[in-house]
Length: 399
Image (cartoon, rainbow, N blue to C red; front, top):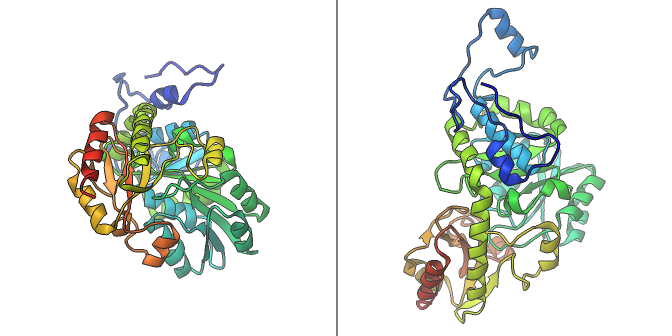
């Protein structure tokens, strides 16, 4: 069944695109997109199969390569990000690994910010060197270190901003310029900012990656990842890599993520408003030794945030007075906020990075990133703001 086309004479807002972009209806005219839970596709003739495989007849071949439901999710993410092309993956880490390895060869070199999620550090520090790909870690806020780390064989610069979990913010436009001067690409993990609050491609990045598991799903249901960039990057590097290695997003997960996109702007706006209120309360609390929130004027990089983000986000980093035991007492005293290693959920989540997300790193590496035993990360959800504040303030009495 055909559908009415979206208006072509004016730009539509993300909130509209995330509901109506890439609508594909069957003959039943359903309002909610259909799920195509199929591994393969049939052809009318042997000749039709041949034409499909050799590219003369565009269409779906096998769900490891592509699938109608996955394609709907991809098209909505492409429209939201303002990218030329993109591909979905089975998880956020599948997106990170594919975005890096698809464009690298033995003898190449990667420069990455030290402040990365523990699994991302594994890809850069442990996995890439197994294939003869060297890596250098730098202080992501120090542009001189990025420049000094560049080698003739440098092909990729990699960062996340804001960082996990300390919410440092890096100058994407300036680092992109350094990459391009060296003939390299900049890959940005944009999970914390979300595609609602930051557009790395518009700032000069070449590739943007997401764990769609986080805000995009937003309800703790499914895993997924997304890689976005130019049509040339996707076709020259990413498409064949994904097709042959198979980190495929399931159609069910793709359908869930596509439905999650319909409410993404509302959820981010609501959680961000609550996060701002909680950050203001924590900033004045005597049991808090340090607080970092991208929406506050006292963030060390507030001026940069104002230039490259449109909001403070849903994450708060803070350090309680005391040590690991104090942090654990606080977490264990919470009644509404959950303890987990996830983020971007409808439920508010507290994470102790030293013993979970960044546990595999050495104490020295964690200290370099500003992670100590009293460091905590709060992902603010959709609960009532007053209820959350009361829960947090009451739990701080145990510190």
